[in-house]
Length: 415
Image: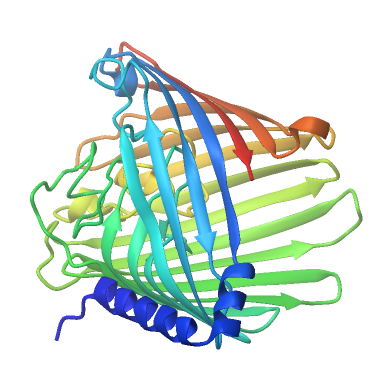
């Protein structure tokens, strides 16, 4: 039996509001305990020789979010958020607009019924989710958003359990929720005009505090309907040696197999990852590596299928970065060296170098190098609530005559 979660959420919202109207005091609580928040956002996005194609794109976009959350009645509340993004003067020119940024969009991106009772939270409707292989990836104008039902159980501070069933998806570049994903719709679609049936997931996150160490563990299972099922494990052990030296070590493992109709072809992938680093007072430094064994005849030569992050680099693999996604490049090896520094309460920055030796076929990989520098500024006083950030990426590929340079300048005001 198929359930339309949007209609269920809508009916539940209507029933909740009807009940509140019959109870004047409760309705007063519903309204006066509500909250309004959001942000204004402006983006200057510049691509030069984008993906080595020789095409330059420069896009300026303005927009934001306005969100309303009601008060609670018997643990129930409702929420809604409107998102907008418009590119004045350049969005009509395909040679100047950035196809992944999302322009000329107005959408009711969140509309949900929420139930919260102690450690249990249930949400039905349009919403943001935050998991390793399906998340909001909110570093463009409008986040990726999902329609479905989610459950979170947080019995104590160190344990978090989450479940979700998602039936529709809205990417950065769409104003509607559809039975699509990033492989079947959008600027990087490889399997256009295929309808997908969403996915369900389950995850557990646990933190174990020891005498001078802490072990953070997370395990996830995804069932991308008729595509693949994915198991992902991430472990991190941190040591508290002193206030100026906190080393850590981490490992990752992913195992993915084709499922059902295998709409994208046979999937057979494994990924192994390791990271080592340390916090050094106001600084941090780390190295990381991912190995994905080649499997001839499998999707992307044994690479991972990640329908809700692939092409954007938003999965939680150690070697993900600004320009290229480890999960979307196929099998092989990827490496990263990164560091960050906090200058003061207003200024901070980070930098990273990535090396990708991956290929989506059984031919030899063409190594890519990626360099990224980012700087953030948080003004105080009259401008508190404003954040200014700039991220510059530069990439080269063996055998390519052009380089890839991208700059993202974003100003955001939260209210």
